[in-house]
Image 1 (tube, rainbow, N blue to C red):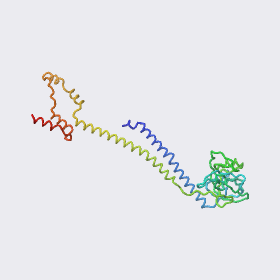
Image 2 (spheres, rainbow, N blue to C red):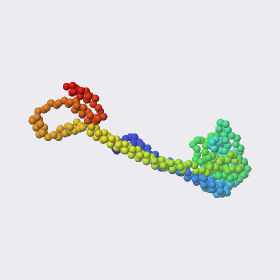
Image 3 (cartoon, rainbow, N blue to C red):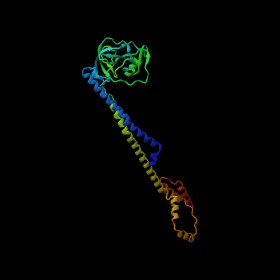
Image 4 (cartoon, one colour):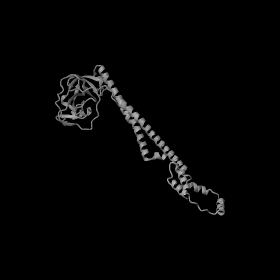
Length: 322
């Protein structure tokens, strides 16, 4: 039985189940559960930000320009630097591609922050639409603190009079515009000076990540259970096949009588003295041919009454004639 499960098919199945179970518990389930935790934390921060008043920019960002808590609403006074505007290229908003305006904002404290003013839909052929310049005068704005994005692998490009980037990475943009920027950036809130189409705040919805995580855990449990069921089914079928073969062999032995091997074994067990006595005292007798009646009886005894002897009536007629 063990040799059966050492065949390549069973070995490959075992390796596949073990690998799938390992990744389900160590990669797939933690990935979905981790995303659910991140969304829950984000929703909590957004709710907390809108339940409280905007905070001074110095309380939201550290002296090095790194934010203390994402999605916090900050208030700051200063002026835009519209000549250093950069576009975030073809970042979808909703279901349509768009350009987002990224403009440095120099605060009265002396720190310059990158502000995302919002988005504008693309023109025909994904061309850059007309984008109003940010105001140059001193203004007070309210914006949400956002974490800096990793730098995109695609290099910035110069098209239609704008420097265009593929990610909001303040270090990269600072090198492009020649202005030192804080590490993280700000996303402009509605009804603020210099806004375009304001970016929507993420919906406070957890999504399906929690259920997906539980599903991967369930799949990781079901895979070895399924393998165990297949192994049990294989063992059960092989036992049933052996029992059927043994039953058929026993039935064949009962119908056919002793086999040739059994007769030879019985003849070999006859004592030598008996064989010599028989050979000296009794001459070999010719074997009489089996009569038709005895042949018919053997046929019926072997196959039962279900096999009729069609020649019996003919033999009886011949005997009656004589």
